Length: 445
Image 1 (spheres, rainbow, N blue to C red):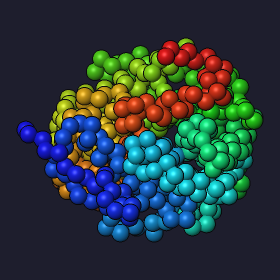
Image 2 (image 1 turned 30 degrees about the vertical axis):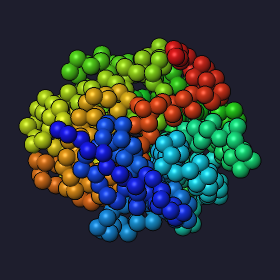
Image 3 (image 1 turned 90 degrees about the vertical axis):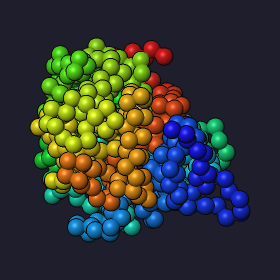
């Protein structure tokens, strides 16, 4: 097929600076090459965090529904974890010149100032905030305090921001100082509750009643890396080995489709869990060449993605559409509400574009095929902020709805594939290098 170059509005012909929405409003039918296509895909999905951001905070809204249908009346709710991924997206946008460095610094300063004043619990933000006030919005009855996992997704990206701007001008250095203050205020040791493990939640009203120790393997590896790296409230290595690694019991012999998982996926040991487990902790943490006594983490993430891909190609439930071009199971909206889609019982025939697209660093060929296929579906699964959250060809179902935790990983993870930007920044943190060494990781560059 002959591909024709299309002007997507990147060039500014007047003094008026076009919004990202204006730049991407015209959806090209084709692209000059894959690089141009990836530019466009990154820009549109980054826009969720840019033009789509909550106005007071500059942070990511939990959800954006283009049909304005919000059954929980939560259109102003800010998500901490999704915002963390969105912050990484802002760095990506600066790097790709979607926005100027000055625009990025202005927005990031607004975000950091807001985060410093928002509700925190021993330095840790809640899962949700009321965007206009910065006050906690309970995620569930007892989940009305600190959410350490979601908060670590923010800290991970803020450390990337610090590294990006640390040698910059005065405004940029002030931003870095503010980030350091927030980073140093996170009381990782408090979240141990006196045990040799780290807990996900703490509430001022319910204490430790959520009772969720962070044991591997799921999306939360970054928590232990940051906790070991903290200059002010560090956690000992034994919590990692006895808690996260379950005293060595984290190791797995499972090899779905010939792809060794190496670690036990919580509740999904045989076939692997939802694919966001291979994304969230690795926005900044570079799995390439990263290993410890339990696993080689490049194998962990790559084989997770490949097994997810191979399962969809195999298509044991005979769903319509599943193929080498259409794959990717992870947590998202579905025909039955929100679900943590993964191979096996939790496969509901629902494909979530972020699963394949955020796996670009691990499966570039397979992810590019998926991207072309998703794009070929046209407006059926496409809107203002890119691909809709999920779709099912079996049920001929989709809705014009977006979730931050899915949209906001796409631009930075594609960037890690293209340039390694976030990986290079995060791994350049001296504290992180010290923390990884403390935990017994080897880094082979």
